[in-house]
Image (cartoon, rainbow, N blue to C red; front, top):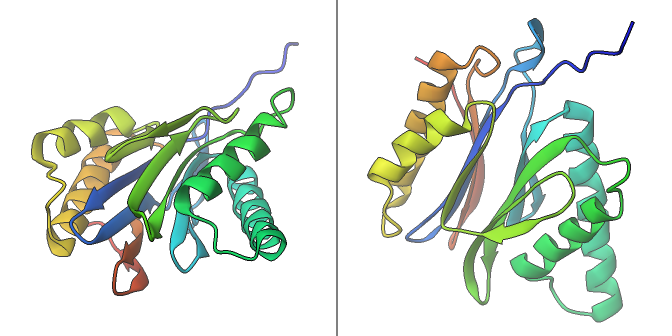
Amino acid sequence: MPYEFEFTGATIVGMIYSDGVILAGEKRVAIGNFLLSKAGKKVFKVLDNIGIASAGILADMQAISKILAADIRLYELENKRQASVKTAAKLLANILYSRKYFPFLASTIIGGIDKNGKHLFSLDPIGSLIEDKYVALGSGSELALSVIEGEYNEKMSYEEAKNLAYKAIKLACGRDVLSGDGVDMLIIDSSFTNEIFIPLK
């Protein structure tokens, strides 16, 4: 009997706003039609100014965040300077590409703030790197993007961006059975970094 791969679900979004970057993801962990957990973490703070959100296999998401954090710290020790967001994104792309024959089964958004400004990148499981102002990945990404594309403005305030990220994921959760159970957000602002949870209403 051939092995059947069961898809995992997730919806993650990232967007740049006037003073920073927001990364958000829902909390449901499911494989196929089986619900494993309602408390999965898909948004990770890597450094105070850099974070990632991932959609895919939970173990792979966790491994990516830990390996990236270690590689960034090693880069900073060797080069005696803080890694920029673009440098961190390229390090992650190299990590993913180095495993192209046995890849991490996760798509990733990386974003943050550095001396050059606000940056947001998306990566597929083998490290293709694309910079953008907003992005959505995962099984509910089409639904989330339909909301973001209609309302997004790079000059949005923090509250407007937070509400838009929540609205996009809430809509995806309402139609995608593999997504749900609340929204984790990582806000990286020019004046603060904060992780919050918003239950779905």
